[in-house]
Length: 243
Image 1 (tube, helix red, strand yellow):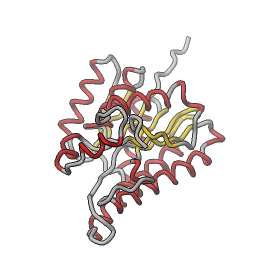
Image 2 (image 1 turned 180 degrees about the vertical axis):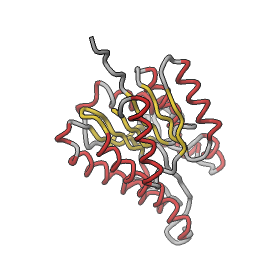
Image 3 (image 1 turned 90 degrees about the horizontal axis):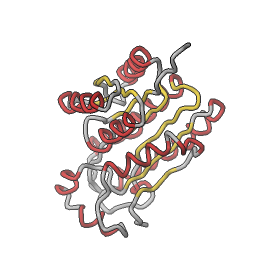
């Protein structure tokens, strides 16, 4: 009797924060994980070790999500190590504060390269590699619809990802692959939010009166890659009751 292959996932930006927690949660759901990271090999290896303690297989692969050749190797690794990929979670992204008037064009290019080109590259590869019935999830920000003063250029980059989600969902419907986005109020690490003085602002958005945790986001990812695979082309705002 043939043994059923375990599902596998690629999680970008999985060396810390939301990406790391998503990788751990999907491992607890029974998936083997490719832990993608841009440069933090030490933390990526810790993520791999934590996944293995959960009884699943994992491998870390360094790659810039905007580099199509490098990211192709990430998908090739999933195929070689785990027999393919069933779930792709794109949580990698960068945020540089700045208004339309004062955002440095170099910073604009950095954000757009990672947030827009990078998400497109990952989506394009997923469209070619993912198994039928799989799930693709992009991490957004409410800034894409509700602009926070001082983050206008970042908001535009995240709005583009929401548009890409809808387009990709339509393209993948014949293969029964769901494509959705999650827009958490808290998408950055607590340390970076504290440095930017934004903790109080984010808490004020939420009726729960707390900053969202990576575990909150990982729960939604788990749902969308399991019982919630019927949803597609949607953006889920995880705001703790914010508006």
